[in-house]
Length: 273
Ligand SMILES: NC(=O)c1ccc[n+]([C@@H]2O[C@H](COP(=O)([O-])OP(=O)(O)OC[C@H]3O[C@@H](n4cnc5c(N)ncnc54)[C@H](O)[C@@H]3O)[C@@H](O)[C@H]2O)c1
Image (cartoon, rainbow, N blue to C red; front, side, top):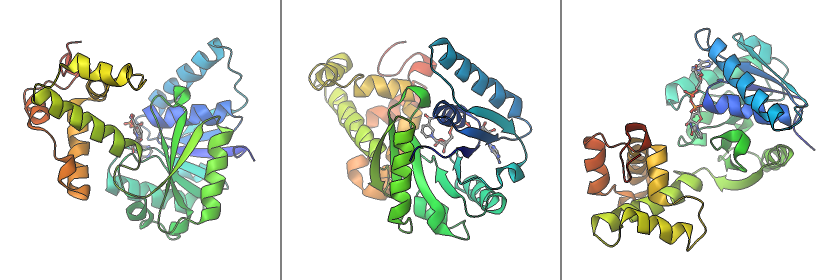
């Protein structure tokens, strides 16, 4: 099996546009639902992304249409939601998808919310599965398939096949805080920060330990600068609440965020940009 012939994507922001792109390249007819205010921007985002693919000689077998009426999702077998990471918003969007496309499998691109908590918004919680794509979607090979308590194993297998159909690699993770990727990525980054704090080595040398020693493409501190120190602090605080003191953010991270050194976006974090 490959990807479904037609899929819906709810939210056409950075991730939604990328997910729509990935399905279109794999041959799907994609319907993206956006708000009135952001529909033009979403259209432009998708067009730019597909034009870039065409420039690189990537064949785009499918199409992407941006709409504002969720009723147009009717009859689609799969809808992936990629609206902002707010539990109330996700709940109302999931309920809207269930009304517009009854019977559809719903994939959520949440990066931190519990699948089981989100499934609570649905009349049939067994249709929900986590499909955690990475940014930028077209260039990223990984999708975390996140399995809730009520996600049936047949759906897990279908989702893994869809991911393969997108030409990406699926890892399968039980619904748990930080899934696999954030939990591990943040754990390494927090230890790297504690090492800077304790004067063990410079940020550059700690990053080189991982890039040259372990072949990570980017070191944990540079990655933190790119993601944003404030974003990483929020994730660490969430994981500390859920998993305990091993995720307690180092004082150095708090101090830098307090000082407005948020990484690349403010031109200073663990590095100067
Ligand atoms: N940005 C990342 O690196 C990244 C990586 C993995 C997962 N995620 C997750 O993906 C999701 C989306 O993140 P993003 O970075 O694409 O956000 P974004 O802000 O770029 O895009 C969200 C889009 O949803 C739209 N939207 C909001 N409310 C809507 C509604 N009621 N109906 C239709 N559309 C609506 C917005 O207009 C916006 O275009 C979040 O859950 C986030 O945690 C993000």
